[in-house]
Length: 133
Image 1 (cartoon, rainbow, N blue to C red):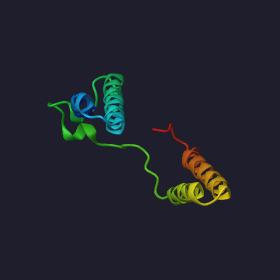
Image 2 (cartoon, rainbow, N blue to C red; image 1 turned 90 degrees about the horizontal axis):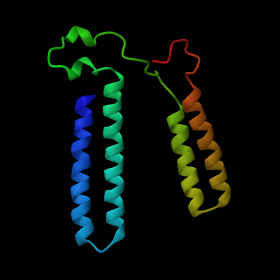
Image 3 (tube, rainbow, N blue to C red; image 1 turned 90 degrees about the vertical axis):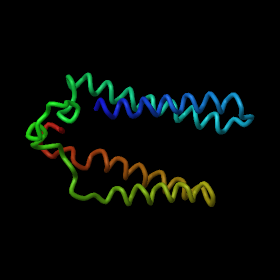
Image 4 (cartoon, one colour; image 1 turned 180 degrees about the vertical axis):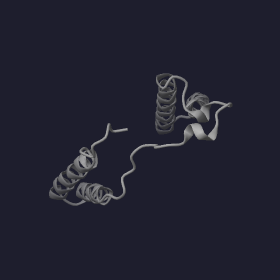
């Protein structure tokens, strides 16, 4: 987690420098806004990784130079075998976008389908019986 934090910190510095240089020379606001958002998003991800590193008490075996391969063996978490909700989410977003162009009723149908798909994503494995890790 520490390596990921430093990677996103470098990205944050890059976007800060690029945004400052671009902000001084450019006359249009779209690029300034995009670089500002990129700076903020990479800073948020870097902060997340550093907080996770501190919360885990030093991180994973991958973060230590003296770690053995055996230390990272075992269960890594729960990975769902299959799900139909990504297709429903894509269909809901497509209907919503088409509704913005063609008709209000498509927006409503897309929003309902998207809400159902997101709800399904969240709760499809809520009763799997373990601690959630």
